[in-house]
Image 1 (tube, rainbow, N blue to C red):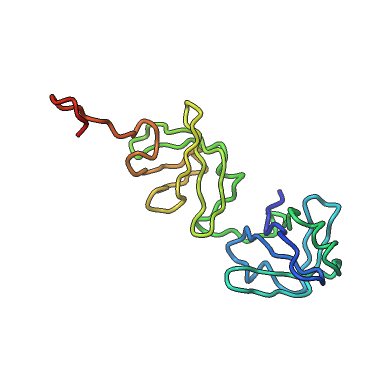
Image 2 (image 1 turned 180 degrees about the vertical axis):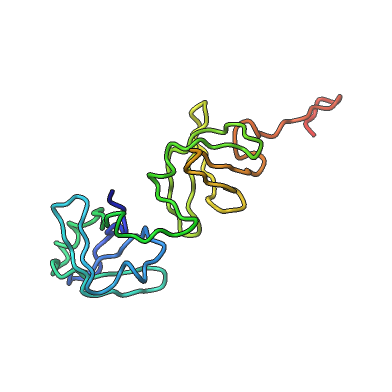
Length: 181
């Protein structure tokens, strides 16, 4: 199975440099001069990195096959991919294809929904859980909230803060005066 290391973004400058939207936890290992990547769609690859530059929180690369801005712009949205068997397994790390379809349970074992996606974010990823009524909930994928991922039992345990899921919605208490408390 192919995994996405980065998605090529906007061209930068006139000589074919592009910004990368990283999808790896170890960019210092995956984005290096001399590495070549297959692409998705495959027609654009392979692409060999000849220069890496970091500026603030962004990573820019130049590929050997791309020499001008027009060619760089044509790469926007193309994924740099690697075969999953080429990646060393990390503890407490899961790929989207491993998570999608897992049953989401609360700590007592009641079903909250089904994991339907993983949205990468700068600070932490969001686990997308679709409830039985179709409502989509974005759950911060941090150990304090997603307390267990059990691929073998086909479930994740989510200790959600109040109000995150539909059944947890706060109830409005009406007093004798008719005003909400």
